[in-house]
Every structure is written in C-alpha cells, then in structure tokens.
Length: 151
Image 1 (cartoon, rainbow, N blue to C red):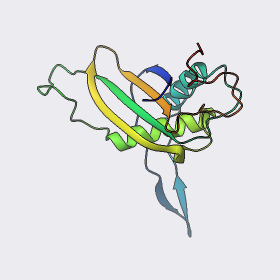
Image 2 (cartoon, helix red, strand yellow):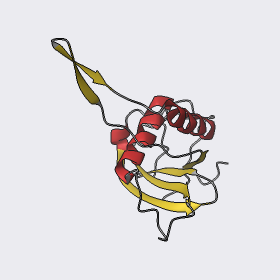
Image 3 (cartoon, rainbow, N blue to C red):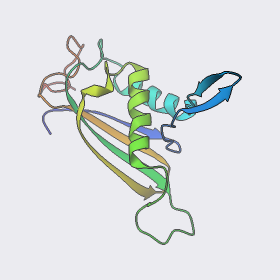
C-alpha cells in the first residue's frame, strides 16, 4: 500500500446488492430494482464521515479491501461463514453505496480488491480504500491522504 488511505467501519448486518426482477404487467414488463436502503444509508453515512474534509470525489484508480463481519450462529460448525450472501453481491452493495454517497465518481475506478467474510462479535463491515497511483484520491481535495505530513 502506498501512503494513507480512507478507512471506515459500518455497524449493522451486511446486505447484498439485489438482482433486478421483472414481472408482466398487462401487455408490458415492469422491472423491480429492490435496494436495501438501510444498509446503503449506513455505508454511505460512514463513508461521508470518513471523507468529511474532502472537497471533491475520488477521481483516480483505487484499490479496496472489504471485511464483512457476521455474528456466528450457535449452529455454525465451520470456522468461516460459508453462507449467503455471496461476496460479489456484498461488494456491489458497498460500491453502490459509496457511489451514492458521492465519495468517488464511479465504481469503475476500482482496479484491485480483496474481500473476506468472517465471524465476529458484532455484524458489520470494515472498508479500506487507497490510491493505486500514489496521488491524492480526490484532486483539489482539502487534504491529501497520501502526503506524509497530513493528519
């Protein structure tokens, strides 16, 4: 990792990005895009707080680390949560929430990622984002995350 990063924690039950569903309505088709607004808002608010002193959204290639935490059910016999939701849908929900929060211009800026699901005492997620090119993630930002002297 180069320089400093944006890191934030979300407390709450991780929710996946849901797939759009279609249904026939009369002679047409209606698309339902179901969104878990509670999880989206938890992630968006945590991301906004972590980036509260930035003046512009991230506009550089970034790497992201996701750690999704689930409370271990009493019946769980495995060390790892080999359970739904799938990792790719969890990532998608977080990326959509970060875009919704205005932290980056587009989740297409993510060029590298690492994800894991673990059991923990409290459900939630830890998200870390850093620049792949060593430059400040938001050009024109009030502070650079990647300058050695910044706080």
